[in-house]
Structures are given as C-alpha cells and as structure tokens.
Amino acid sequence: MEFYGEISKSDSKYAVRDRHVEFILKRKEAGSYWPRLLKTTTKQHWLKVDFQKWRDESEEEEEEDTRGLDQMLKDMGGINDTLPNMDDINAEEEEDDSDDDEMPDLEEDKTDEKETSE
Image: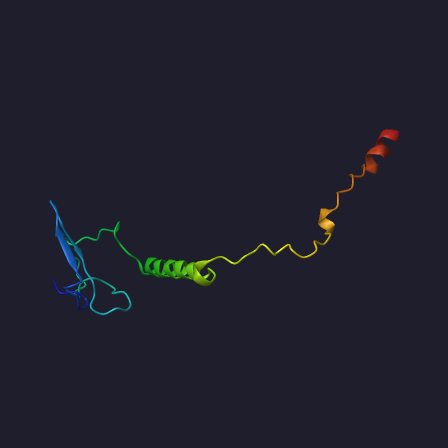
C-alpha cells in the first residue's frame, strides 16, 4: 500500500483482531487533512473505515478549544488559586431601589362597568 503521504512508523499502531486488522496511523508532518488515505484513487474493496473511531478536523479544533477553556478557568482564580474576598461588596450604605417598593393594586377595567350599567 502506498499512502497519500508519509506515515510515522514509531507513532503508528496496529492490532490483529479475529476478523480484521486495525491500524491507527500517524502522519510524519502535521498539516491539513489528506483528501484520501492512499495515493491511488481506485477503490480498495478490502479497505474500510471505522467511522465510529473517525476524528474530524472540527472535532480536533473543539477539543483544543475545550483544553484552552479549562486552562482559562484555572487562570481565573486569584493569587495562589484563591477566590477574591467578596465580604465587602454590600459593606457600604445600602441604597433604596425602586424595585424594592410594593406593587400597587390593579385597577378595575372601566369597560366592564359600562356594559353592566346598560
């Protein structure tokens, strides 16, 4: 078999199963995805892809993004990974807020009164 590009033999793995052989192939050079596995464009009837183990470009980008998010969350802690002291947030004089006032009673609908008086 002649692959589309060079494979790193030391990083690649294989396993012989009862009915098939599994390969995990690692490329020598990182970069964009290959358009196909083999150099030839003819279909190999004996070669199949296990799409349950397929890793798409977008999935790798998402995986990298989540690792970046985890690191960012770790970095958000205070000095020596302590959270900032928030005891003094309401220490100053509390201000009255219009939202704290009680709601007035609802007014009756005047159109109902006119209909009943007629």
